[in-house]
Amino acid sequence: MPCTVIVGAFWGDEGKGKIISYLALKDNLDFCVRTGSVNAAHTVWHENKKYALHMVPAAFINSKTRLLIAAGANVHVAQFFKEVELTQVQNRIGVDQNASIIEEKHSAQDKASAINKGIGTTGWGVGPALEERVRRTAKLAKDIPELKPYLADEITEINDGLDQGKKVLLEGTQGFMLSLFLGGGYPYVTGRDTGASAIASEAGVGPTRVDDVIIVYKSFMTRVGAGPLPGEITKEEAQKRGWFEISAGTGRDRRSAPFDFDLAKKTAKINGATQAALTKLDCIFPACQGKRSFNDLPTDAKTFVKEVEIRTGVPVTFIGTGPDALDLIDRRK
Image (cartoon, rainbow, N blue to C red):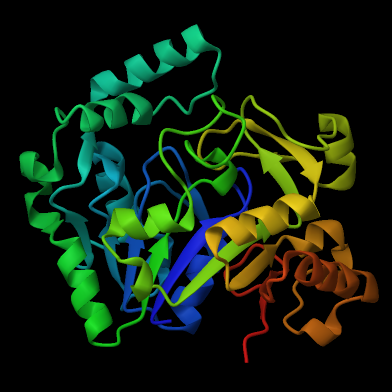
């Protein structure tokens, strides 16, 4: 703090929503800025209720946090209003006037393109919407009448907030390995850069204004759709280990693989990570369930955490031990 970037280390689904929601409550965030688009959902568990959010920032659970959608994001208007109603954030959410819009036509184009190319897609229409933005023919938020009450100058708000020492979190979506430019596995990637630098850029925050980059690892790796996944195990084996998951955003099965230390080190280096969060430790070591202190973890779990730190060179400051926002060990001094 005051400016922190949250970035996913692998192919998404690392548990970024959990870390963001925890920080919103624990650090009492002043601002949370959602980057990216509607094709990625962040899951938040709070007070025994599950939220799968595509548009509203995961920090919504703090009623004092100003929520913003970045200038570099693109907005699915219907989904935005659906989530605003669900989370009741009408009086504290804003959409940058220059955020681009996903139209109904984009979804059909997205699905047809994916079939023709054999590349998986969520079907929301993000790719074709991004194409229009690159061609400079896209509609912007300021062109949509129903968004008028929510229009904001997100870039000015955030930078003025930083000048005043406010606590700002930039919420990355998807995972770094899905980056269009840097992740690898092209063409089985997304339509934008998903790295920490791009997250700051989408929000209009210069690199020297970022204080911390928190890279989020899951204790095992997953990805949805086609493309490489080193060390992939079968669905049956994933079910046996308790690693099998279904995507919160699309309902598709997630493929699974053990934690890859070399890949974790590489993604930490490229993103300039200063801290790491390690989620779902309880899925690997069930005795960790609900623990709130590192000293209470079993020896094998502590060894795993320390190996992550040693091999990536990044301190693990957050450890997820259950689904709720507060099921977490905070190791910051």
